[in-house]
Amino acid sequence: GAVVSQHPSWVICKSGTSVKIECRSLDFQATTMFWYRQFPKQSLMLMATSNEGSKATYEQGVEKDKFLINHASLTLSTLTVTSAHPEDSSFYICSARKSSGINYGYTFGSGTRLTVV
Amino acid sequence: GQQLNQSPQSMFIQEGEDVSMNCTSSSIFNTWLWYKQDPGEGPVLLIALYKAGELTSNGRLTAQFGITRKDSFLNISASIPSDVGIYFCAGRPDSGTYKYIFGTGTRLKVLA
Image (tube, rainbow over all chains, first blue to last red; front, side, top):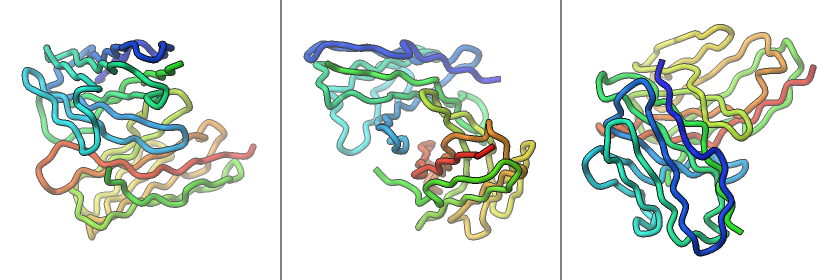
């Protein structure tokens, strides 16, 4: 099956520092990966679409300079939260789409809980 | 961001009962997905639907792609305690994009 690994599963950082979250597709190639943010008891909100070898596409209202996305290979996308502040504390989840085929569900990582203190 | 309307928002049921939830949109979708999310985890895909009218089962779960292409339904038969969690629908707009829009979620609690 399709497995997506996300690391770290949780992180606590000081305000003003940067945090990098990794999303890896373990047994398939992912041309496209997606980054979501989820607040407690709320749904998943798409932040950006990460495309291998090109710039990420950000959703309206998401600061691209604050949430840096890099998709340097077909199996790895990273999300860096720069100059983190307490309001950035959230559950961040990535999902990946296989490079081949059309109709299939997307596979999600297990999420990263970020707490900024 | 855009979200789908999902109902009910939450429900308490007795073990053994059947459960129904639905997701509606004002626009047409060409793919519907149903996910379950446990606390502190990422969503896990339950069922994927690709064409209007499609009815697909996965064990005790059955989902249908509405014929109007603007809604989808998920049924859980003979619920058990491990069915507890949050169920999300996700729809792919009929615009050629690979982005999915998520429903607001249905929080299910099963009373033993």
